[in-house]
Amino acid sequence: MKIVDLFELVRLSRRLQKRPCPICRSEAGRPLLRYDRYLLPSNIKECERCGLIYCANMLSPPELERFYTSLYSALMDFKATEAQIATYQSVARERVTKISARLGHLDQLLEIGAGYGYFLAAARQAGARHLYGIEPSTSGVRHAQTSLHLGDQIVEAPFLEASPPPFAPQVTVLFHVLEHLVDPGAALDRLAAWIPEGASLVIEVPDTAADWSSMGLINFHISHASYFRAETLTDLLHRHGFAPFEVEREADGIYPGNLRVYARRDSSFSEIRPFLAPPSLASHVADLVKPWSLKNGYPRAVLRLLRHLARG
Ligand SMILES: [Zn+2]
Image 1 (cartoon, protein in one colour):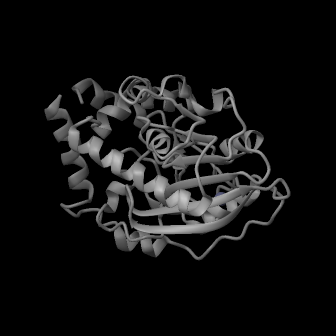
Image 2 (tube, helix red, strand yellow):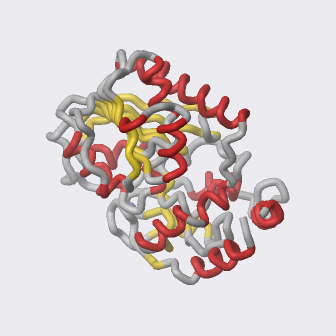
Image 3 (cartoon, rainbow, N blue to C red):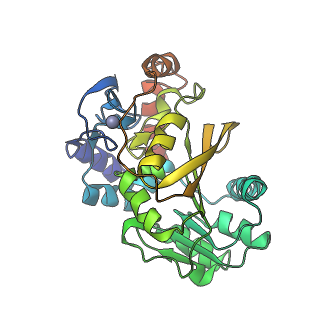
């Protein structure tokens, strides 16, 4: 991260725009946290109508795209070290094992937000022949194509602009993608048009209802536009043409508190259902975020930024 990135962060803080709940469009919400870990005034709220926790101040789509192509990797400090690659590979193998235990042999597999391609490569290793990944980052696609030899089985495109896969996907996966999208319902509508009736969808997100106390404030940042829990994610699936049938919770996935929901495409499910907010997580969040903690509060957030800056 360079000093120019810090100026960019300050510039972004002035570009945030107020928005309603991305699921139910209500503006009524309980404020949980004004500033996120980048000290951006993201105004994290819990919707009173549907229960979703979300950033009520968000970047416009072009600003968000600019953020992902410029500042995001500087802030996340991605480095393809041997240790990190070994972790990616082992997480990918574990996902293939767990998901095929539920759904059977994986094939005609579509991954949205395929990252560096490790899951697709692990599925290929397990015998999948028809694979397709969509990934917005140039570095991810380049790595998947050159180091993992995925060739034209992965394409570089923002999901909402991508072409459909060259086959009818039987299994579609999104690992820690949905929480990044400004309009997750629109993404599910697009998937519903691609996924045949009865085929499977597997979604992983951080579980806001879990114990993520080790992360504290660090859990909240502008790139996570929504903070799901089992109730809000399964409800969203119901509204957009999917029937959830299994919820798995892991204490330690790639996140402390990993939520994996399995659903099937079912066109009889639709948006027409009343919103019913689950019990509030406001006190849970207040218990886990210690704003002035040196370990994971604002002082740590400032130190992280300074450390990124020092590394250049
Ligand atoms: Zn809502």
